[in-house]
Structures are given as structure tokens and as C-alpha cells.
Image (cartoon, rainbow, N blue to C red; front, side, top):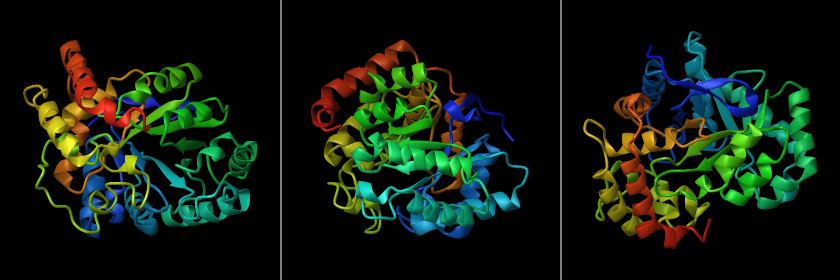
Length: 330
């Protein structure tokens, strides 16, 4: 196995790889993925030094969790920290975020993953009011006391939600959209997390693949792919698809970003390297649907830091093409 840089994931006290493995794709929400291919992706990630898997109970209605559980059962030598999420299996009302439901969702995830205690459970982008509820955090503390979970965290849509969660003493980490097309978390969220000792997990790091530079205005995605059916937030938050950017705008900006890639690196690896070197980031969790993608993503950790000129060019690109469209929305 390759040894990758490790960073402490906030208040969990556990070290995880700076590039993790996102597993939304393995659930089937990006198009069909065969079981053998899913195991191949996980194996390639582990062999490339990844020690952090991120999943959720709704990815493929639990399929992603089940695949991870079966894979790790067959790979007892793989020292992998698994973060899952809960909350999206119920109608998105604050009153559904209660201890009884947490226990029910937790039981299902523990069965899917084949463990007695989950490493980390994240609230999965719940209604905004949930982040301010004392009762919610009391319930999460109860799950820890019952040894159902070792730690808890949140996944958020907005910077305001992130800041509310960071202020809570039991929140171990915050998962937030961060990539060269989504810079707003750099202003307040990352500095606040560093000060509080809270980990930051960067999600949607390639803006649903836009930052790979592989797509054009004529690219067609499968009907079951969220990049087809959720471009305007029809099924869930718009920010989850292309980071909430208009597709045509994103394609044009991605072509310009690709030109910033250093020699020997792809546009996707450059985007991941940019995220890794932002102060306060613990891990970035790109997804992959193939062995080659998983290996290429992991190799971004070994790239040298991007020079200041590239960082300045990313900021300029964002200010010119992206800021006006997304800054006010999130």
C-alpha cells in the first residue's frame, strides 16, 4: 500500500488520509455500477493510501453502506475510518430529528456496515433549524453514550449552518462543498473550524465532474444520473449538482481551469490539490466509478503544492465567472 499524508479529523482524534473516497457513486445515483466494479474502486483507493470512506444511508438506499461493509469484512488489514450520514430517509421536517428516529436509522446503518459502533455519523444536510436544536445534540450525545456511534458531525449546505455547528462542543467535523468553483467557505468557515479544532471534509470537490474538464455543452448524462434530473434542484438541493452552477457557465469555466493544471497533472488532480492545501481542510472526498479514477484521485495527494500564481488565477477565475451566480445563493 502507498502511504498517504494523514490529518486528524477534528474532535474524533482519528487520523485520516487527505484524500478520502466518496461513495455516492457506488450507490447507483450516478448510473448503474456493478458490484465487482464497486469493490474494485474501494480496493484501488485502499491500495493508493486512502484510509477514509464517506457514505450515507440513502446512497442507493443503503447499497453503498452494504458494499463498504462487505468489502471491509474481506479486508481486515485495511485500516479505514468510515463516516456515514443519516436524516434523509424521512420527510425533511425538524420534528423528525429525534432520538427514536436516530436509533432506527442508526440500527440500519450498523447492520449495513456490519459493525456495532459507527466511527462517525453526520447529520445529512437537515433543515436549517436542526443545527440550532439543543435536543438534537442531546440525542446525538445519547448515541455516543450508548456506544452506537463513536462521534458525530454534520454535513451542511450553507456557511451559516457550518458556523452554527462549529460552535457546538460535541461536533467533531463539518462536511461542506468546497472546490475552485465554491470559495465562500474560505472566508469564515475554515478559519472558525481551525480555531475550534473541528475537522473539515470537502465534498463535491470536482463540481460533479465539471472540474475534470472532460465535459462539453453537448455531453449527455444518463436519465438516472442526478446531473440530468437535479440541475435546478428538482430532487434535492441544487448545490449538490455541479456545485449549483449553471451547466453552460460551468463548462466554460472548467475549460479555463484546465489550462491551470501543472505539467503531469490532470485538471481533476489540480482541483483536489488546490483543496488539500487550503488551511483547515482535513480530507477531500472525490467519488469514483472506476479503478483508474480512484487511483488518479488518490495520487493528487502526492502532487507538490500549487504555486501562488495558480492560487491567484483560481481566485480570478472564480471572481470573473462564478461569484455573481452562486455567492448570494449560498
